[in-house]
Each structure stands twice: as C-alpha cells, then as structure tokens.
Image (cartoon, rainbow, N blue to C red; front, side, top):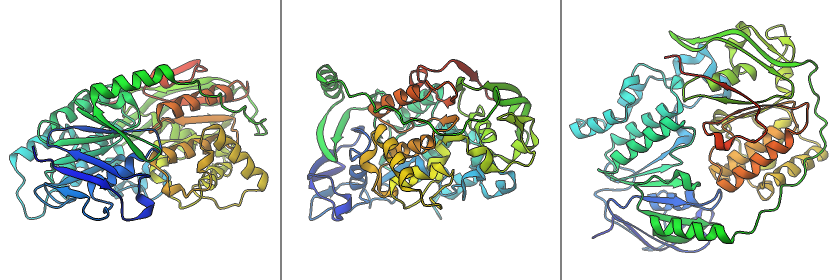
Length: 481
C-alpha cells in the first residue's frame, strides 16, 4: 500500500525546530496514530514537520496526498490553544465583559466563514458537520460555549476543507467525562472517513481505535509500535522505575493573610447572559483553611463563578458577594482583591502571550499582572526560581516563554500562582496538558502547601483522581439550560 506520507531521516531546515536526531515516519490511510511523550519531549516539533509546517532538508519527504499540505484534501491541524478560531479575547477579562460581547461571532457565523469560497458544500461534508452536534448551538456566541462545544465547533469548521489527514493536539483537555466520551465517539466516527493523528501526553488519552503509537523522549523519536506493543512496553517499564525524589520543602511563608473567618460569601447570587442563567440563586461560604473541589459538567458555570471571586467579571460588583470579610463594590481596587489570590486557568493560558523569560512570567504572579511591568528584586527572583525547581521547571527559567511547549507554558503559569504564597489559591483545571509525572508532582506540592492552616484552596477538576488528598469540601454545579 502506498503511504500518504513517508519521511526518511528527516531533519528540519531551521535549527530551532529540529529534533535531536533524524527521524523516520510513515503514515498509511486509516492508520490512526498517536504521538506520545512527556511535556517537552518534542511532540509538537515532530507534528509540525509531519504536517509540512517546518520544511525538511533535502528529499527526506514524500507525499502522496491529492494536493498540497494546508490546502483542501491534505493535512489539517487542530490546536485548542486557538479554540476561538481567530477571535480570541483581546484581553484576559474580555470573555466576561458584556459590553464587548458583540466582538464574538455566533456559531453559525463561524461555520459560514469556514466554508470554501465559491464552492458548493457536499452532502457528505454537511453530514459530517451535523454529526459533530455543534449545529444545535447555531445562535450562541462563541464566548458562551463550553469547552466541549468549542472542541466540536473547531472540528466542524475543519471538516469543510475535506482533509485526508486530521491532526489534533491534546484533544481531550478540559472536557468532562461525558464530553470526553462523546468527543471520543465523534473522533471514532470521523476515523471511518479520514486518517487521524492525535498528540497526547497521558496514556489515558489514547482512544481505543488508535492503531499505532509514536513515542518521543527528550526531543528524540524513540519508538514506533502497535498499540499492543506500546502498552506492554510501558507496563514493563513501570516495573523497573526507581522512585522519584520528593519535591523540595516549601519556603517559609511571608504572604499576608486577610483577617476574618470567612474568605468568600455568596448570598443568592445570580449571573445571566442574555436569557441564560449561568449561576442561579447560589449560596456558598468558604471559610479560612478550607479546601474545596469545584466540580460540574462543561458549561455549568465553574469558570464564571471563579471570575466573580477574582474580580475579573463586572457582574460581580452587582452581586451580593463578600470577599475576605468585605462586601464587593465598596471602593476596593481589583489589585486589593488579587493580592491575596494565586490563580491559574485555561483562559489565562489562552491569552498570556508574552515573549519573556519563563522566570519573568512566573514573577508576574508577584504583582498579579499579565506581563512583567515591575522588575522583581534579586530576592524575589531567587524565590521564583525556588518555586520553579520545586515544580520541576528549573531548567526552563531562562528560556523564552513562547518557545516552550504548551505543557511547559502551562507548568510555568501554575508556578506563577504560587510564587507570592497566597492566602487563597484558586486552581482552575491546573493540570491541563501536564503529563502524569508532572501532575503527580504538582498534586503533592498542593498538599504540602495546604498543610498551612491559614491557606484556603478552591480547585476545579473534572476527574476525582486529579484532586489532592487535602480536599475536604465540594461544591457541584449543574448546567442551567
């Protein structure tokens, strides 16, 4: 069988995009493949070279697709960093600002823009788009879509180009269990008509229909094997692994703690967008020293709730909310609120695009800014480096943040939430895109941090196994529509 893509001893022309050794890669039609490896292993670099986004030296590559890459009939790539499809918020809080709502197009408008100009869309393509389920939300603006709905929208838009190969980076990030099951079923249905390449860093993210696994480590392609061979090898490797050293002890705390028993009080809070209730008559109290899990399906309002606490959502000023013992909207500045809070979220990852050394990104958490506008003291930089080392990110400190892999960037933003050792730690899906080893390490750091009796935690996760052992309270939200 003639392969769709064949690369022999591939080396990227640009030195910055090279793997450490030449690689071989072959893809046949219907040979659904996973690129697997830890954060920073080189998965995205390899994917860009497979997709043709990074040209190779010499005649290493042979394509047998019907037309050029990145045009109709070739390879199409989906990365959920750009989940808004080129309509990303201009600033971090824009998603919550009703005054700016008109800047976000509807689902119907996004689908219309994706259709090929001057060509009639085939019945087969329309059927595929319908199968994504996104056509049930045509009138919604995209800032009101849940994570699962955004995945479906981006997938549907890509189908209009009729690709033969669809490459998806981290397809299951941020999806609740039902959305994950449903999206897996959608991918399996698409796999009947086109060839899929998925990029993942966790074994649990490898769907059952995958036939081949390409593994990378330290920017080197190490194995190309069948699904069965991969899992057998991983099982054998786990038996011989030596225990990882425990993370370094945490530095002594010097962060101020607000006075008062209650950190957060919501009294009959309702938030609406148009005719839709996101939060409806919510009563909730978080006391100092409590550790909360905030759970619920995609679209239940978890991120909206957190945006009220962090003073990112203007509706918070009209709601009966007390933070740190004070009623919101009584003249306090956003900075007075944020100085007690350490925060990380998927929205922050999507909008934080600063060409700074990674340690400066971490240090921006000391001043609660997106970017570094006050130069940290030498003592503060040393503290930030200590925290990076604890999370296993010490070797990233001097590297340009934008040159890091998505997983490495997420890790740096997680460090950013800790550097000022806040009284209230709010972690919205903090393990997005982190491999199993880094996730376990971060979970143990959270547990260690929360041994301090005056620290309070709110953590969002769709999976109970991700929650640290310190969790002692739970608030579960449900969708209102």
